[in-house]
Image (cartoon, rainbow, N blue to C red; front, side, top):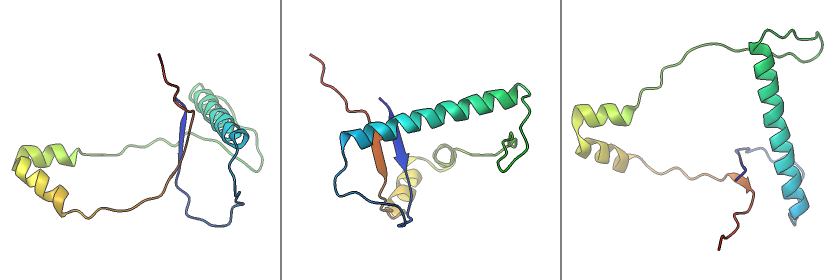
Length: 108
């Protein structure tokens, strides 16, 4: 299944009163092309490709980050009750996301 999720809060894009299957398929095709292009650029740069001078650039952004599994740490240090209390004390945050997917077909 192909899937794209968009989080865009700007209101300056064109809108349509009816979304056609053609529009959905075009979006999925463009998303696939963009992903393939990004993969090609990344792999090329990793293999030492040079970048032509001009208005755009491409480079490898190397770094590191720490992303502790806070739930696991809290569970180990304080137990399941603390994990449940922390989750229950956290207010829910509403969101609105675009999801464009290839329709799932029923199998017999």
